[in-house]
Image (cartoon, rainbow, N blue to C red; front, side):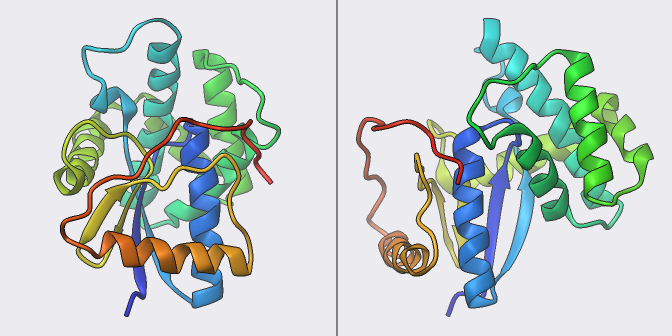
Length: 203
């Protein structure tokens, strides 16, 4: 029986944020534990990023350095992710990924999560990069290459997705979770996919 979920996140990804709120809903209703793991899209896309994507992924990498620092200090990574995701995503608008703007969001998220202010310095501390890279590669060791985030591990099954434009809530969240865990438990299953439909909804 499932009682624990591992979830790899990168704060700047809106799809990961929507899925994470679904998993949080399920975890609260079912009394599951979630372990939140930093994931870097900069590490995933090393040598491939350019332009706006590169700037966004640099901003995201700074955010996950802080997540790693939060984890290493023994604080609740989930609280930090909730705080920074709430600042970034509801409303669905674009956000400034400049260094100064990202630093301000990180500082505010740390304050909102009730964490020590000095953790914000981790955003520019490259000593966290090896742990962030290791966490990213741990996720990919379960899924293989050619995927993005979110990545979820339930029992012995690790998959990219699911990806929503709007998360199911309440009873619908549980029904989808039960279907999801049934599907990913099948060892020969690997993919269901279609083109995105509709606008992102962060409710």
